[in-house]
Image 1 (cartoon, rainbow, N blue to C red):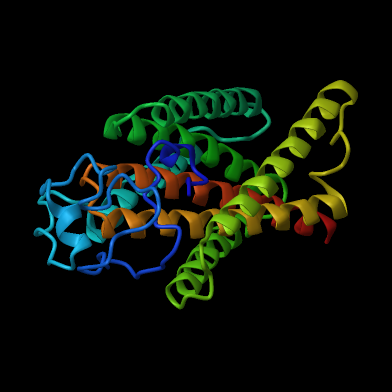
Image 2: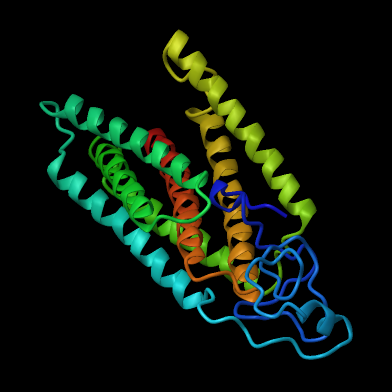
Length: 295
């Protein structure tokens, strides 16, 4: 299985069958399944410390001790907190320093669009790198924060002051709900689940691109997918897709820990989770803005 996030597309921390909990490890005497390069002792694992581990596992012998410097859940939490903290800091600074009043509206939105483009380019650069670059990830988070800060300030000023707080709370609730459901095994990430999510995401993005093209040509909201009743419907679909991406991200983190991914990979996990949470927040903000505008 491959991840929904492009940062995981080269790694595949996966056991397609099996849903061990966080901090779980492959059972001794049971060969790991799937295509993960981090399965200790398999031929595909470039980090295996015991060249005879596959043979030992085959005959039921205990595997070699876990490799030092492997990724842990604490590493993922710490790096994710750093990345999200940078996003929040950038958003707060942009909100304060780039007001969206009538005299400064054009400048603020110009900077926000520029920051969004830079963040997009940085995310692509990191996605195609073989190893994580912490400075690149933090810089991406900073520019993403600037974009979100200006956008949130505009929504708060011109639509409803309470929408931003509601969107943040809603994003946190989605994250907590998906994490709880994943831990309870109500969500099982399988190859079929992954294929369905990716097909739905590609269809969703294609519709949004078509809508944007029509909006650029004809003005307004194009085909109306991002406003009114259709906007609410597609916003909810976007939130659901974001929740599915979170489940895929949790699976990647779980398998990376179980199979001894190197500690630096925790930066990729943080990067993927940050992108997913930004996606959910934007969709949540859009839905709540439409609902507030209809009041």
